[in-house]
Image 1 (cartoon, helix red, strand yellow):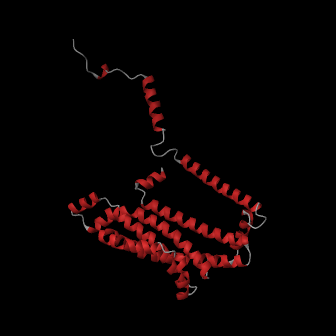
Image 2 (cartoon, helix red, strand yellow):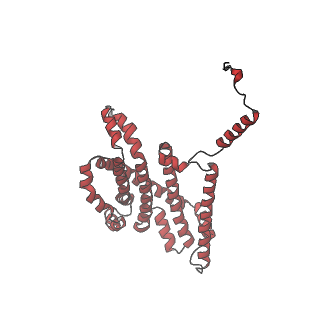
Image 3 (tube, helix red, strand yellow):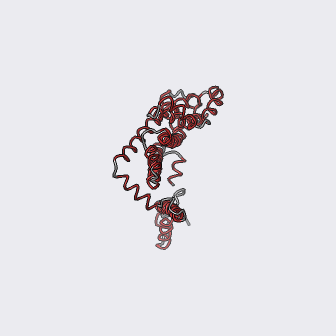
Length: 294
């Protein structure tokens, strides 16, 4: 007696087993992918928490204004003052002036800090020999140099840009130095063994490896540059948001003072979000960026 191996001898699949398998597969496929808990729901939940935090801050601010006997303007007073400033040319002139000086100073910091940091980071001897010099100059409070810089250049754009460079170039330089150190030695050895051209090494090894830390340094430098710009305008008397804030303070216009301060904060928030957007576009493949999107 022989066993039949024809297709008809195979046991037929019952509808119950088939439907059970299909339901199970549908249940598995409907689950969110690992590392992406909730997807859109997670983003909406994050937005809800952010809105809740903002409302909590506004509530605390309002309570502090009520208990301060009128010395601290409330959120509604500041919002009304800010809306009034939006209709004036002096407000927008100050905003554009601050942005122009900030962008110029940050561009100079980028041109100086990133290439110099990369060159120092590549050489171990250069890193060791410049460590004390960099640590010394980056710990000097730049605002303490304001009287000297103001004496040299007066309340001008040159004064502001000098202070910006003296304060904001260090994060870019240090982050660029550490970015070079993060390149995997095995990858450098492989490109050397296979005689990869210098252009391809820069394009496919060095640039992707250092971009994350360099853009992080850019975020830090952008914030420091904006703080120094407004500080130089406020203390040094140069045109911009800081000077308008000082004028409002001398006139005892408290809602306008806070409105100008909030304007500087909004600009800083927008700059930070823009750099994060560019960073995620450039480094969409990086594990850290993919983890943030999850």
